[in-house]
Each structure stands twice: as structure tokens, then as C-alpha cells.
Image 1 (cartoon, rainbow, N blue to C red):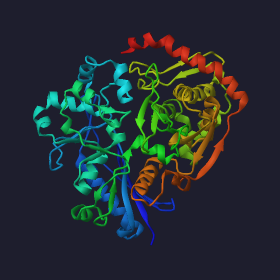
Image 2 (image 1 turned 45 degrees about the vertical axis):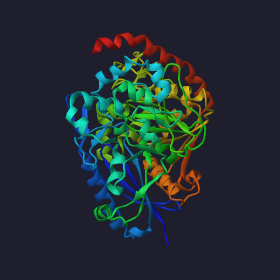
Image 3 (image 1 turned 180 degrees about the vertical axis):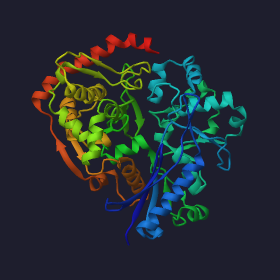
Image 4 (image 1 turned 90 degrees about the vertical axis):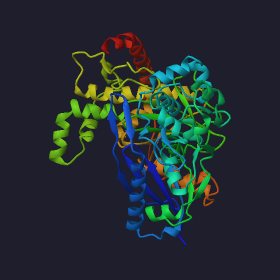
Length: 505
């Protein structure tokens, strides 16, 4: 009898349900969208019941469309948005909308923690900086501003944990999402009593921690009716989306590395211990696989900068694409190929939305530097791709201090273009590997986690059956050498303007 695994990727815009066979083939997927509420400048929330309704709709639609017997689904598991704060009562009922990862309201609460522990000491406990982005700071905000909600809160959950509760009636989280609460002892894989004390939070409001492969329970009768799943189907916890992508990208052993090139972008490797950067430019997540870690650096605006270029400077390419049925990026790539390594001296700083790694400077701004009368359109376009990639290369070099990284698997929309992939190969000085499925790493990682959890797979090495490689691009030795002084100049340009950026506030 065929066995399947159902993976849910609970993202910011919607839930994607994906069905995989035990042989690693993706059979189909369904997306159910939901709303995000932006207000008060930095506040971002979602209705948790929208998550549940989306999971119900996508599950039913996928099962019905593929005409499979729900009893053949061996497990359901998850990849979910991280760094949120959903307050629920003992019955699992949301007490307010979830404060999601993008919300920045808890600045005052992060400052309260800073008064009790240094950033450096916090970083070495949690693996992350103390900022308003994480779960514990958001729960502190609820305590300080909505005390009646805080008092009623039984547990605070992330997105996938809420769905696990709805499917099983059990309150759990696992190490990667626990890590995203920023009160997690990354070396000992437990809640940090020290950080919790400094935050002034009741530790009983945090869910029980388990490994990502832990089976919470079986799908209840009520949940089975709502989702179309079979009653008793094992529910495996899965992981946070940034970390399930490690598994889905084959980053399951030390030095195995991937780069996700979406609107934002990140480089993540796998290691046997956290990577603590002296300047705290990178962070470390608990890996899906116990005993391993996922050191990472995420930049704010990568593919987003390329999209900005298309929408502002390359309006003619967008017009031509509609006339001739080509992608505007194809026209842009044709021009980029006419500009040499280093864009004829043009440097682009890609900080259009401030920056996380490696700068950690919300005041940073974008800039074209070095423009001369002989520069042309091709140079401008190429400099944007180079600027994004050079920023990511700083993250890569931090990770290389601990891990030997010679090849990188790339996923996301930015991985579609061969021109940008070659720029990556040359700037990173690494072999670039391109899988056939560029957008499925999170779902694939969740499915494998589920399969390991129920014993369908012996271990995570099964990823070799799931990953189908479409292309490989090697670095050009001459281009690698030519980029070295350009990378140094890129860094110098940022630091030369660092103080100037504050005048644009």
C-alpha cells in the first residue's frame, strides 16, 4: 500500500499543503491564503483561526484533488513561520491576534532585558541578539500593555504549534521554534531560566519542548472531520520554516550549506556547535536534527532589491516583456552580461530596508557609488546583483571560519537566473547547486521530519531521494580573483557612509 506524507508550510501569506510519496516524489500542493494586519507603523498581526481554516481547506482540497485515501497518509508535519507570540487559554482559544515575526513593537521590552544582561552574554546563551523580533519580548509587551490577556494566557505558541494543538489537543513546541522565542538555552536545548527571569515572564506560559521528530499524538475525530485526514493520523511537530529548509536543502551534516534567494535572503550551514561571531553578525538556530545547529545570516532585501530595480529603472524591460511574452528579468540579464566583473567600478549598497546581517543597522540606506560618465545601464543593473551577493558573502565568510564550505545549494526565486547564479559562484568562490524544485525546501524538510518521526525513513539521509539536481555552476578562477578588491571596496563604502545614514532619518 502506498504511503504518503502531508507537509504544511504555514507562511506569512498563506498555508501550503504538499503531499509527498515515500519515494520522495512531490505529488501536488494546494495553497490557502489569509490576511495580515499592518498598523501603528511597526505592528503586524494575524488571526490564528485563519491559519487553522487554511490548513483545513488546503488539506481537504489536496486530498480530494489527488483522490487519495486519507488512511494512506503516514504522517502530517509542519514548517511554520517563527518568532511569533500567540496567547491562548487552557482550551487553546486565542485570546488575541498573533503578534507575528515582522512586528517590531516590543522595543521597550528588549531594552528592559538589555538593562539586566549584555547583548554579548544574551547572544552566547540564545544564539541570537536581543531584539524586538522574538517571542519573549512580544510576550513581555502583552504583559505590560494587555495585562488582562497576559493573566488569562495558558500558553504562548507559534503558528505550527497552534495547528498541532487543533489536530491533537496537545500543547508542544520543538527546539527550533523554542529558539525563536529568544529565551532558549541553545547549548542545552531547554528554556533558559536566566533569560526568563530577566524578562519577568511566567515560565509556565511556555509550552513543553520536544524534538522536531516527536509525535504529538494522533489526529482527533473532530480534527479529522475538519481537515479530511483520517482519525489517528500521527502528527509530527516539524520545525520553524527557516530550519526545515535546512533539511529540504540537504544541509544535514557539518559544512552542508544553502542560500535562499527570496525577497530577503539568507545563507545557512550546518555545524556540530553554534557559531558565535565576535561582532554578533550571524545567529545560530537549533537544527531539526538533534545534536546539530544551523548557523545563519539573513539580509533584509535581496531579491527585493532586484524587484525594485525592475519596477523603477527597468520599466522598458517590463513593457517589452508584456509585448513578447518573456520575463523582464530575461531582458535585464541580457544587459547584465554586457557589463564586466565589478560593474565598471559601480558599487551598489543593497540596504533599501535597513539591514539585518551582517550590518544590524536599521538606519542603513541603499546607494550607488562610483558612478562615472562612461558607466551605462548595464553597469547599473549588474551592480545590484553584485551588491546583494557581496553582502551575503560577508555572512558566508563568517560561517567559513568554522566550516569548510565549497558548495552551496541555492533555492528561491533569485536562483532561477543563470546570470545571477554565476555571479554567486564567482563572488562566493563556490560550486552553485540548483535543485529542480526551488520553492519546496521547507515543505520537503517538514515531510522528511514527519517520515523520520513515524519511522517511515531510517534517518534524514533520505533527502538524497527527494532532492533532484537540475544544474551546477562552477566559479571562474579569473572572476574570483577579480572580485577580491571589489568585495573589499564594497565593505569600505558601507563603513564610509555608516554615520551619514543617520542623517536620512
